Image 1: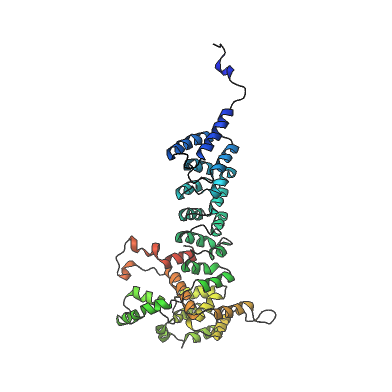
Image 2 (image 1 turned 135 degrees about the vertical axis):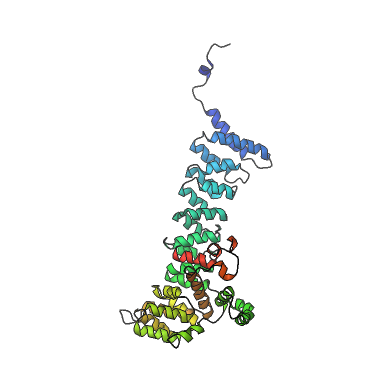
Length: 401
């Protein structure tokens, strides 16, 4: 029996056994399901994870690469590796299909922005994960989400990005291509979109509502018999009906018609009083007419004129009333005015009316909140307009409230 101390009997180089053992465990975990029982793989994963804590980056990368194609790999091991350095995590974040939404949500909150960009670019990004990435508000991550056809964004997730698109360059152009974008969201985004995107919104997101009008046509007569006493029914039918101008306002107006009011504005200049009167005659609230006529673009005027049946002379009068040039420096037709006429020609009356009513519905809701008592419905959380109303949500996007 040797008298030497056991420590003195150890070889000069240590750690070789650890390296071999780590490789063997990786090989074991990577075996197909037909060769390893789930409980055995789970136990092996627990042992492997404990060794990975003390492994080198090279060894962790090897493990991540081997397990990236395995749907049955122990998820605790995958979550750990996915939160390691980017070079180690990359194979898993890019290709592993073993992660579920819960795994990805845990990873999102504990990694760098570079990791989150990889998650946003995954072949499939579940809706809960996409929404969490959108809420973090990192531009590069959001852009990666919006360009990824495999990312699923919820309505509230799109709301978050639409709100940010007001100040973040490039978001509007990416949002307009997303299939999840709703008309109300597109109409809100219209006010800060560029010229081409505005035209896309007007052509793609405005409905002609002809089927809706047909299905509800008999209700107009019923509401008239009730003298339009129900405010909810009255408001809803105003959104649906074909007629845009306010006939009752004509009777009270100092002007004979909407055309007459617009012509007066061209001769006298557009005053706050005329903005309000034109709005009343056009069947919209003053805040809506003010928003349209203060907008630097020409699209809103085209929508207003087409929706209310105003002809091209009124387009010209609106332009003059706002003191905008009809001719450019070279003597030709001013480019913005030419664009106004072109947009007017492209719009159908039905779609222009739908657009105008969406604007009026949402913009005015921000300034004239309706109490639940006004509708005859008992107030409770399920009837909280500020939470659930499309008009209120759109208004908050437009005004940033």
